[in-house]
Amino acid sequence: REGLQTTLIGQSIIYRESLDSTNTLAQQMANQGAPEGTVVIADEQTSGRGRRGRQWFSPPHSGIWMSLILRPELPLAHAAQITLVAAVALCQALSRATGVKAGIKWPNDILFNGKKCCGILTEMHAEFDQIHHLVVGIGINVNIPQADFPDELQSIATSLQAIRGEKLARAEVVRTVLEEFEPLYRRYVNNGGFGSLRDAWKANNITLGNRIVAHTARGDIEGKALDIDEFGVLLMEKDNGEQEKIYSADITVFV
Ligand code: BTN
Picture: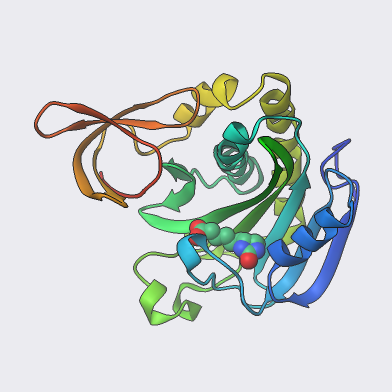
């Protein structure tokens, strides 16, 4: 917590050498009343979780595996937008702390040269249609030599060390992420959603204007990514000229 310039996020930091998943402990703590801004960090995760039931490679001494507990007083409909907020914070933090100019692939993957260096997994608990708490899980591949990624990740994952060609101080990166996140989070809460951060998201995105394939539950949709709206929904133009809103999907971007 040394030198951390925040007044909310990270006022309480729970550190463990090894956890199954920081999101799991953060959920438990949130259910037991842990205050907003509590951050759970582990040096290693034994079953780190990714989106869509995937695993998240979380070896010891080499990454930032952390979860933020948030309690925004917002309708449930705004909950998913917190991942877009976190994505902006991550891009800004990587740029400031490491000089790495990574970009956001909608909705919230952080890529460098087409390979993922950070991932975000938000889990939520709602009461009726209000948010009770959010757990925003952030994984940053910091000091992982490229050769240490498993074979199946070689073509899709990278680390800050691989990008920069040197090891980086994880504490410094954590501090910068929390510092960049706090003001963006306050805007998200005070303005009732992601809308006012849309320009900041756009400034860091590598999706809009490009050809994409959206892999949706209803099948693949091909076309061009046009815009995102104030709810973070992706607008695309299909090859037949029709426009389509994408609420939830994994996408492939052709740059
Ligand atoms: C993704 O699939 O892109 C999301 C990956 C999220 C990984 C982070 S690491 C810290 C937190 N705890 C988890 O189990 N997952 C998230």
